Image (cartoon, rainbow, N blue to C red; front, side):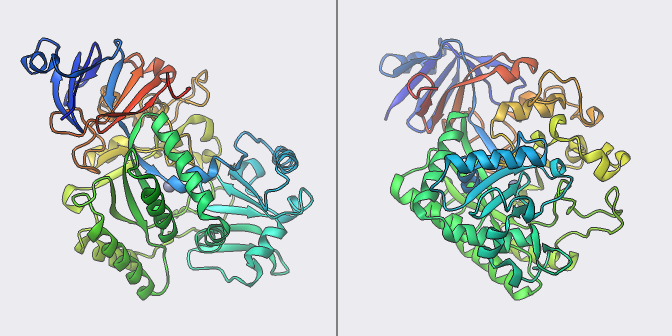
Length: 494
Ligand SMILES: [Zn+2]
């Protein structure tokens, strides 16, 4: 047995709202003791144990991201990021420069398009003259892709009918005009791009994503839309690289289909996989439940609303009709796939309410309807267990800026801005910031998410001040997973 004593730290006590101790004892993978250097449990082991000086830095349980798309995130690190673009001309110029510096790429893959930047327009003809290769521009919310005609041709989009719950946008002539949204994204664009992406690039992407998460202090994540091909890539990755240095749980994506048998087949598949990969049999890599994309997004004007979007007359319905949804949830719950016995888990992404990215909502939703956006306290009042995620790649994956936005409702992208979004809906508990860091994920994983004896020794060492304002300056110094250091800023060059 390897025993390590971590001393001279500011270690967050389990079940406290900001109380710290100095010493942590780890035996092999697990926390053995949390307390002070003169505690008997520490004194007894000190003579023979390995010692680590924490240099008065802060120690928190390793972060867990409750909503991420790990493969897409890794792939996105290799794509052209259009988020900084503020106009169609910016987008076109960025693509021209990128194309010139990437002459051997078979297609030009972009990310981070915010629909309001082009007034919701996504025309192939606006991209056709930029490069002869297929161009794919994924929306920041991931629910749609804007293509040039070369991409539409290789997707064979002209022969594709609108799938249930999705749309291939067309011009008057009936030919595809450039935008594929919702189910068309999931059934047409993603399967094609998946098929033309080699296993080698997928493994490189997973490696990049895991490296980024490890450097950011995470020791767990929940992949929020795991399909067959992503699972296959992760399996190959695990077989080749051995253990992934973080707990990974997934929600199996069950796409909507008008054919009930198709839905049942997908759910049966999720049930079968979960029998071998569940939280008890395989805590490091498990299926926690299913994911149904019931609805679209506000930015894409595809989220269901009782009234039309600003400037529109049609009503947008949710993607899943209520009866199909009930059937699907019942079969998953009957099979023990959901966390039903533990209550509802509301997995939210505070970083999505950043005032810097919220600008288009008041017009689209009509201002008075925005007033209840991100009503977190109401979720808590309703009895939900709230967990925080980033939905990376739709937003930055770093944990503390996410907590900063949740706690202040101010922008982490533009900290100088005093603007807030629905400050009155802030969670009432002043200690939310403290609570978030360790209580939130205990229901998603077993024996992690808290530094208490018997729990897995997953933690992050931070150079930070324990108040909200300086949160954006906090630095991840080390990440420890199962009692082993998996990232160190001093040796890993960050
Ligand atoms: Zn997502």
